[in-house]
Image (cartoon, rainbow, N blue to C red; front, side):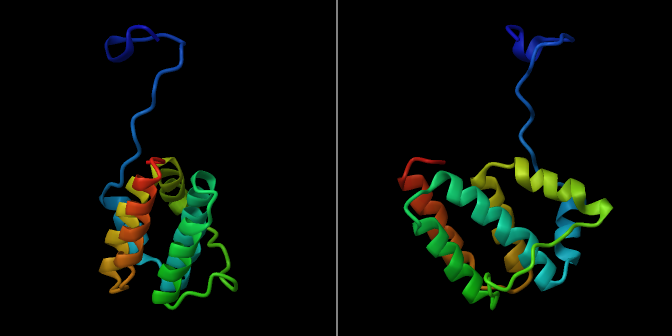
Length: 132
């Protein structure tokens, strides 16, 4: 739409507002058990990072983060969200990788998981590759 932010109504596609975590999303993520949290977060991160990084370095850093959190990615079952949590999953999926990583780092720190170093390294690596 040529009117962009000043458009009051039309049928032409407009850019969507960037997804953001609100208090409810943060609480939902915090209330998940570690296995459910890992089953939700790691598959989404792996999917997104592998799309933008073909070298495998991003996946290696995610594997290190998972090991530091005592999560075995090979035996991890993907978390199936309850109906009330589907909005959380959709919000995570529509976030940029940078925003998703920031939210995951914050959530991991609240859980006492020491994976921030690996996720920071991943973020820096993706910045250097100019994919963020």
